[in-house]
Image (cartoon, rainbow, N blue to C red; front, side, top):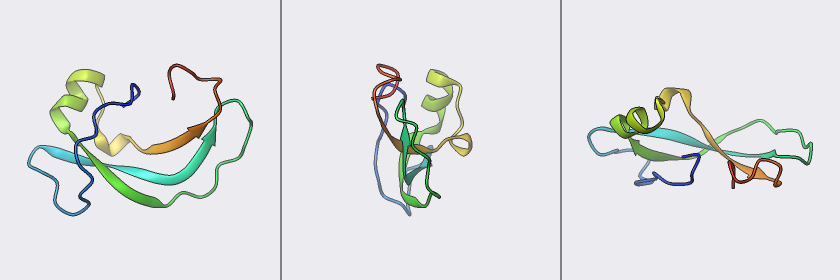
Length: 79
């Protein structure tokens, strides 16, 4: 996730058993450029193994969203 790994599939309607959807939002955030975020809409869902999210990062899909980040002030954390 933060490291840019973990996406399994992009089928929006039928995740495999044990997988949960994380919304990929149609918005950009600035890391250093100071741009404002626009209202987000869900572009698609990316699916992750629920147990893996918890084991690796102590995260739950219901608390997550993905979006594009521009700028380099947060590298290498966000790429």
